[in-house]
Amino acid sequence: MPSDADTDPREVPWHPRLRHELIGHERLERRLLQAIREGRLHHGLLLGGLAGVGKATMAYRLARFLLANGSTDAADLAIPAQHLVSHRVAARGHADLLVIERPVDPKTKKLKGKIGVEETRKVTHFFTHSAAEGGWRICIIDTADDLGTEAANALLKILEEPPAQALLILISSMPGRLLPTIRSRTLHLHFSPLSEAQVAQVVEDIRPDHGLPQAELAALAKLSSGSPGRALELMSSSGAQHFAAFRQNFAGRGLHLASRVELAGRFAPLGNDPDFDVFSELLTDWLAGTARSLALESETGSDHAARVAEIHQGFSRSIRLANGLNLDRRQMLSRVFEELENVRCEARGSRWPGNQSSI
Image 1 (tube, rainbow, N blue to C red):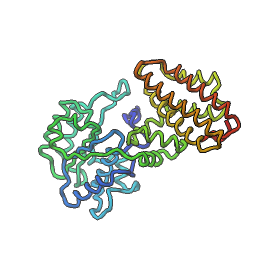
Image 2 (image 1 turned 45 degrees about the horizontal axis):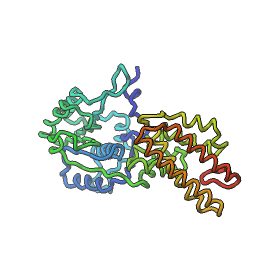
Image 3 (image 1 turned 120 degrees about the vertical axis):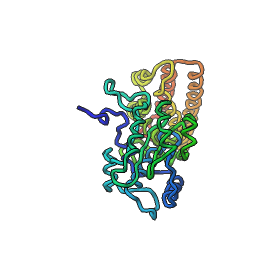
Image 4 (image 1 turned 45 degrees about the vertical axis):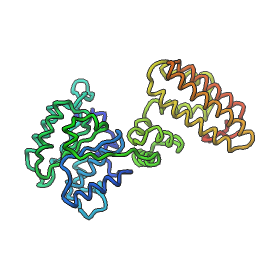
């Protein structure tokens, strides 16, 4: 019979418990390490910031360090992936580490909407027992945003009367919405958004096989708003896949009528469509970058650059109108594709930026 881990949609190769590199939060790590050295690590930590910015990675990194009795002379909290503690944490098999998440519904195989009180009671039970290995007992709640009111209240006793060498780490993307009693009894550490370069660096580290041109990776990093987790979601989104199909068609046989109709038809004509939002952002950046690259070419290239710049401006304006007036997105995309194909035909024989072949 498959376990919850087998059906859990969060179970990806880059799950935070499997990650050992942490980029962009060195100041917070130094602060935690200094608290450990001075014996004043707070018993309740609230890690707040954007979803996917590295909060859970830090939580597991800190947990491994404490469970492995990391040296206080260390420069950071890193514990090697080969260490026994790292293996046990990765396998969810360390007796002194409890992780509370939204459970998987055994019937639907989907995540339940909340962390219920029965889950948080496990925390109380966990902390009433001595550490199996005589050291720290650590509980990570990922995320505290998923706690129901009754479940959140069940944590208060632990926060008010913490056992010795017990650490409760709450991860939250919306710490301001947590119960005031939770916030007042924890030390809040804010995780700032990463720079676009740092986001791209994390994505390269996690997905070295992504196969994206640097320009597209940079566009995804820009769309991520400083969250590598968001960038990874975008990378695997249908919108990003549709954009890859667009680029492949454009770099190959071109945007003939059939391909224009097929590409535009992948999107809902009206209403909220997250895939369209991702695709349009990537296309907007691609148009702007292509216009800049063409402008650096010969005089003919400058003429083509002006045409692409006009398409970019028109597309940006159309997006605003489509969002405000709920216009048909498929018609808008078909028109943009046709305009691009016209420029492509006029520029036949010259080099198109980002393509290996001529247009």
